[in-house]
Image 1: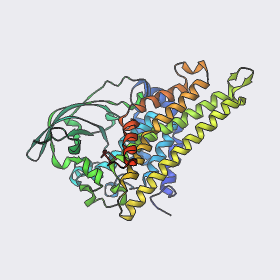
Image 2: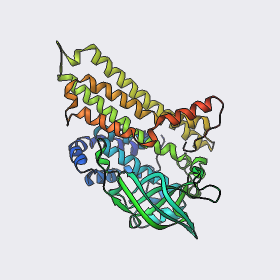
Image 3: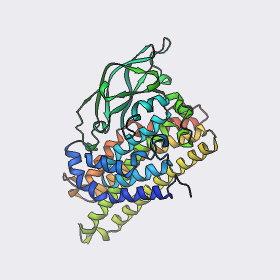
Image 4: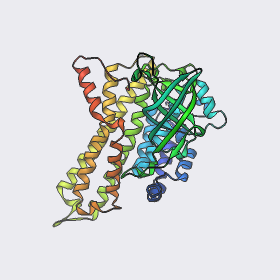
Length: 396
């Protein structure tokens, strides 16, 4: 038995814990949305269950488990509360990224408390000045999910050079302590309200070199942290690991929407028959279920293939990475279409505020706004590679 995989006793205990949280997550959902913040009790539950440790290095008390465990837990949580699953995904995956930084960065964050969490906003909007020993960073970043639960932040910016003031090949992630930034509360949205994805403001602070991560190192799967974190898990391409953390919450929300649709169908009268007896309602349920399972299996296949390469010490073929990246990005498109069909099928009651299916639909709609879920550029890149052109995206 793989002690790090889905069949391991630890993984099964985590999945059982995620299922057991369902009633509490649902009970807290209204407060989660109203306060624009996942309740502290939920984050405490995640800590207690070890969810934040799944991808964290063993040297910092983590479990270094197979990514499939992480995503399976996220799917289960998202069925009950997509906002909670969203911040779990994007915060816990940062424990993986910190492992590929220079090890001194992990010392800075976890030296006194290995349970400290990191939020992020990767948009390349920061202004960078190269100085001795590192950089001066300024800017305002939006959409830092779960930032109020975190004491550090990953922020994106491009390091200018004399020949290229803005070249995404020079993109880096900058790591800052909460004392170096301000959280501006401005999260007023139609879906995923509980993620508390507020703005982060930085005013000319120093960031040492070791607290930055080059995107090209992530693309090449050869990072400074690999010198100490040698498990195959940390040879995965950064963006592949991150984007699935995003689409997993959406896919789990679609499962929750299907469950809500089924509950409506059990009691709703659809003309002369109960909705549950309407052949069209039954067909839609079958089609949605099949589509969800297909997307799950695609994600599982893709990540098993990448981990097989990492365990064998082999490079993951670029053309496969291009396809895997598109597969992740298109999940939100497909889930939105499926939830929209279910919402229409339940009739006029679906437009009432407080309708459970509408809530899932709006969460899925909000998830589609994340840049990782903008599928068109990834489809165009994939088509170009299929036509014999070179890959033009290093975020794969």
